[in-house]
Image 1: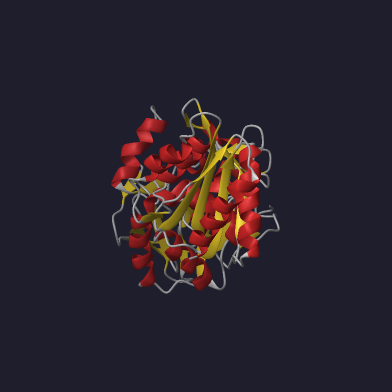
Image 2 (image 1 turned 45 degrees about the vertical axis):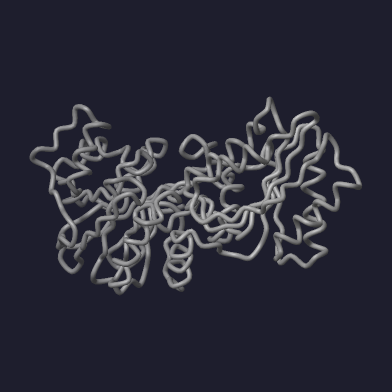
Length: 388
């Protein structure tokens, strides 16, 4: 994306990364990722966050072009994660008069990444509600701990009423990607921020007291209209409430027999009028998208072959992801398969039993090796209980 002027005094200097294969070492990003960075040019000039080291050269060029010979007074560090703060040292080497704005936790974390960086005479520590006056523009700082790191903060620009929201309201995908915001924002939220619903709720309550006209996140597009839609999504997600009525079937199959049972259940549910049935192959499909769909819908079916007396590995990994992200407030059913000692349903339920407000369908479907006509009655019963 080319540098662009977002308003009379605010500029975008971020970088689209379309060559990355895995974001944070695990998330597939077929449309890349945007590392967002902003400049406010006023009586004083402030840069808001740097970018990942993968984009250092382009970012420094963008910055130089926008500044057009102007010096920088402040670098505001909203988030220390390396995809945003990796160029801290490079920036300070180039802009020797700039001071770094951060909170106490920010400055505790900086030496962990930059061992030899001395900020003793270049740091300004801010706390909740403190302000930085740039001239016509003022940044008010809002602490957002555990959204999703402990040092995270946001900055509210009081003149143009912009919330610089750090990782909140971000999404996967480069800025020039033409795609629906919600799908990749949801996948981003539940896999990266999802564990921290309570801290997100705390920040949303703070935001409710602000007159916000625009939201500028550190990933994904700048949000400039219909903000109630985006804030509403975050409210639902962070409360762990189902977003849509529907059933998500996640299966782990070795020879295709468990897959056949899962697909038969989908067929039965659709014939019975289920509003939405989604299905995924955990061994082949994107795990992060499977996590997203599990949180999106109000009902879940886990279908796994028994493997070495346990759960098939990709199913075990999936349930571990759900637990790590505080999966709750859903109805869950089970399908198991086994040739001599089916154990998967018992093991899957045991893994989930510590989660909050899960309703388990008591009668699991048991397939012995391959699905038979006699098993369809079990699937019909499971479907009825899911739709009850």
